[in-house]
Length: 443
Image (cartoon, rainbow, N blue to C red; front, side, top):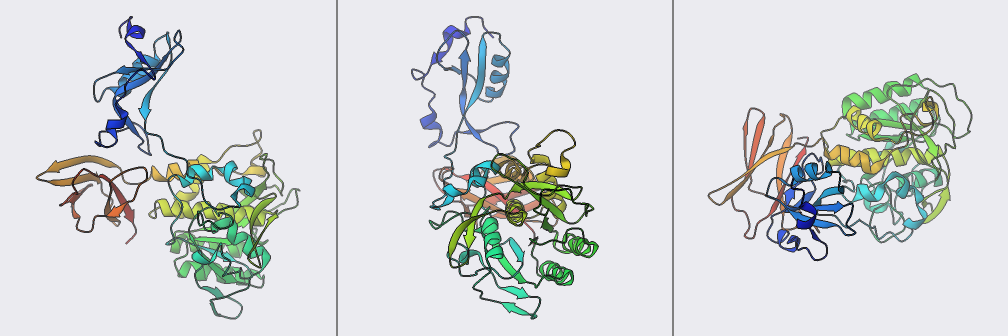
């Protein structure tokens, strides 16, 4: 690049990036090497020269923005260079008591909710005495459950405190202007037990047989071979995940690490462990003095691995919502790869793979979705080209604006597959241009 480049750069706010034209004219470009595909303003790069006080703009050719950033960053007189990205407004839920829920800041819930808030098609079983099913912060998400003891459906319950608190940690309604927020807007299913291992196994079998993918059992028993076998049944038959608490007393517990039971330790606001440690611990999640729903339509603070576990389950359910084609093993791998590694080497008995990072896990889940490899516009039709994976259902969606977005299904999209490629065509794209996205699901 030219040695007189600093003199050719135009400082902000004097510089005109023409960003205000890029959005309405749909000229935004996808940023390279990004799973979430953020958009950037074309033909300009933001740069800060070391001898200049203000950030400046340098014009570049369309398609060479990333190359310009790379070349600028290598210059000895440049402090930094970056694309002019289209940023997103941070999602702030309307739940009035969310300020009491410090754990959402800790695990990155707000960043996760910018992209995904869960879907009711994904259900979480709360295996316990039934929770308060008509709680104003839960009722929208509640689905009929099953009473293992009485062998009959559960359609109503005044609830128990332990299970109601757990249900709220997993899936209290996000952004409903009431109370608190769970991890996401997934569905809740009560399964009643009196506490025997056999009942817990029956509960997992019932959940798996009814397509429930996430099962929370906030009881002791994570060392049970029988429950591990039930967890394997859930993994094979519903492609799901069984999670249980790592126990509360902060002492060593000589449990084996059962491969199909995911044990969750409890952390506080400073990421210190406040629960048992041992080989059985797989993950850590906030559970010390957390705030959630209680009986009599109330709210309260509480502590326990019993509450860290449903938070973990709520996060797992949102990942299934992002990409329903993920298996239970794949969701666990996403959680492992994104967990925050805490403590010195050898502390995996306290934290397992680490404390869950909701925002990072959601971004990783989005990166697993089918990648759009090209777009075509011919004869008034708009076609999206993507990688094709047999056995999945593909739908095409469109919106007029990314922020705020209002995605609508293209009902008459034409789908054509050819080996490992799929093409989805909107035969009548609306005037003024549109943004498109693909969604995949299990048939």
